[in-house]
Amino acid sequence: MQRSIFGIFTAFLCAICVLTAIPAFRRRRYGLGILLLLNAFTNLVNTIHAFYGTLF
Image 1 (cartoon, rainbow, N blue to C red):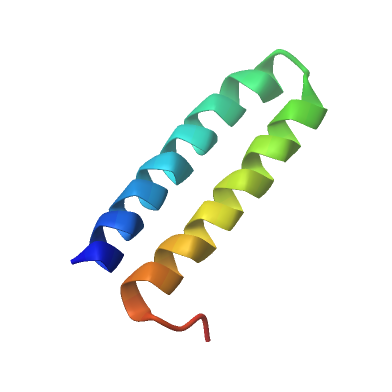
Image 2: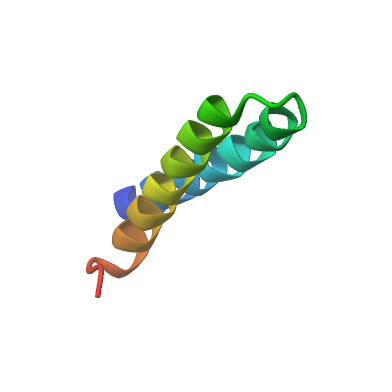
């Protein structure tokens, strides 16, 4: 139960990071956009780890 709640929370954070990276790229703030996409990737990895218990 605790793993699935953490997985849902990190998936939600991943979606927020992707949605906020889009306006950053439109305003030509490439550093912020790249940072948000890296954070989204990290959250995606944490989501997979929370649901399956392993990364690979």
